[in-house]
Structures are given as structure tokens and as C-alpha cells.
Amino acid sequence: MRTVTGASIPAGVIKAAGGELVDLGGKPTAEGTSIVSYDLEQLVASGDKIDYYLAQRGAMNATISVESLKQRPGYDTLPAIQSGRAFVIQEELISRPTFALLEGARALSGFWRESK
Image (cartoon, rainbow, N blue to C red; front, side):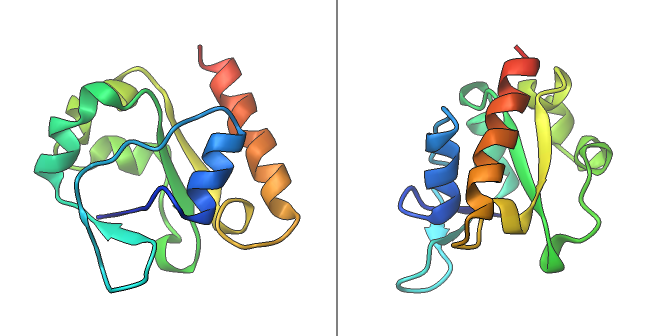
């Protein structure tokens, strides 16, 4: 399982949309990367800090869906998953340095407004 550092493009989009990245205490996968590995125990232990769960769909995660998140072992214990505050967004709207990031920020802020 992976997330990103606070200095990453996705973290910037999340912040621009009014959110905040939760630090799960994982370690970067390589020196100089913004990708961080974590394990299920770290995710579950931080579950009460996670108001919304965001996953991205792209080449490396083509089949991800809110339903598939609900079926992952341990994820059913996360309050954000239990209460329907999980969102899947296309990778290019959150991870690639293009003007599509604006659309990604709008999509995230819209999801957060609708799910309150």
C-alpha cells in the first residue's frame, strides 16, 4: 500500500481543495521520491484521523473502485470507508503536473462538500 509525502503534487491538490494529508508514518520507497509505503496496521491505527479516503485510478491501479476498497481486509474498520467518504479519482487529475490538476481540485472539493 502506498501514499504520498506532504511535498508531493497530490498533497498540493488535496490542500488546494481544502483537505489535509494524514501522515501514516510510512517510509519513502526510494531516496528522493514522494511515494511512501505503509502497511495495513499503520492505516487502521490512523483510521480515526482519516475523514476521507482518496484513491487514484491509473495504469498501476486500473481496477480500483469504492466497492473494491470496501472489500479489502481491514478497510471495513475505517470510519471514512464505513460512512461512504471514499473517493476514487483519475490519476491525471491529481498526480500529473498539468492544468488538469485544477479539475482534480474542483472534483475533490465537490466530493467533500457533498459528503458532509
